[in-house]
Image (tube, rainbow, N blue to C red; front, side):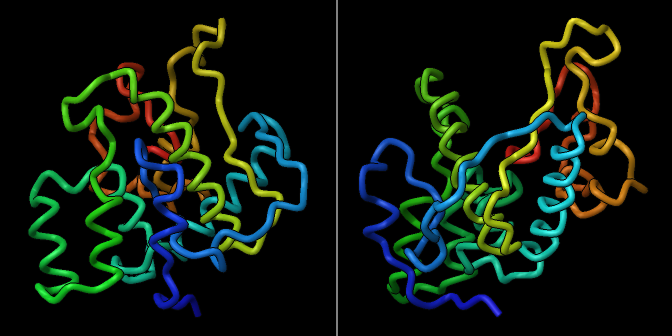
Length: 203
């Protein structure tokens, strides 16, 4: 069982003023002792990593939203659901009483600057760090120390692949995609099209 206690604000804020994210406590982060490499989703290793990711998402989605390892926490770090707002969700989940957990959520939720209409130059570095943070969370909840987010070649010269989300994220019956938020009602209905790419870490 993953505990909500022991969250360290300092870990979050140290050196991350421009893009505070989600790794809450040193016990969650873990020491990196293996060489990590991201693999193509078309490779055998990439498919294994996708399976690990799907299992981790199941675990994350089962955690309460106030847990920094939960899917909801990562989702809200990126952008608070448009049907509500950050202040309302903070009050709903943590009440009005100050607490370390509420303070942490206040500082890290809804921090994707591009969503807030700020400098678009922040888009790539923010999401690069977000992916790195998500990888560490997946390693923690899955126990797979060498997990690295698989990728697909969005710029492929193959017309059948260029700009197309991999079919694992477009088939409701696929054993990988059924666990992923990319296949739930929260995902944009156009996300499987060529014009709206979706990545595992950004869904």
